[in-house]
Length: 225
Image (tube, rainbow, N blue to C red; front, top):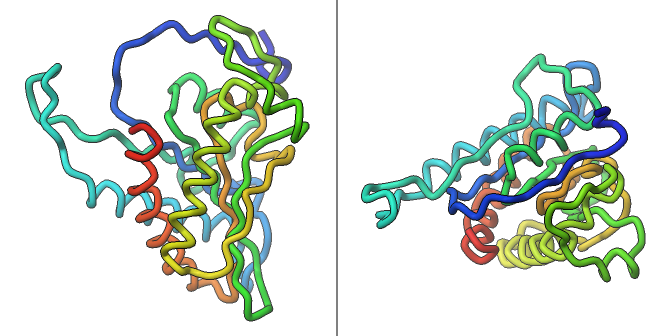
């Protein structure tokens, strides 16, 4: 089956598993992305993703799990790429769906020249009215451009909660939540959101990485981790 045409979204397991957070830094070896102070987006987003992953992993504890009878990590943080890697179309969607990630977060950034430093939050929608009428269907086969319908409500909830935590962190002008056909989120059936950061210089990302990491640490238990 050609995964460019449809994605099999068969869900049959009810076994509890640790929370899986997948972070997708925009760009890859073939797609440098936008330019920020003569640096390309793909390098900066990877730095942001790695910093978020490190901070979350260092900040979480391993609670006692009665099922396993031992200490078990809260979950895992998975990055969609490593330096020098090229990503095929829909590869990340297939990866996230097969891994059955609990939350997928795409990180984007661009150069900003104004004093306002917006952080925009997105989730995938094709129709802002009818998409939200959708209810999840077990053992269903969704075309890739409708995969978001499976968890559209949870994606919107995750985006709204993350916005609230970022606003509380007072990192700048947080905008959204915006729902539209945001290409980096196409084909993903698990809850998926995107964070786009405006940077005045290439080193400003460190401030946002910390705020996003701390907001995700608050979001995960509130979201259902």
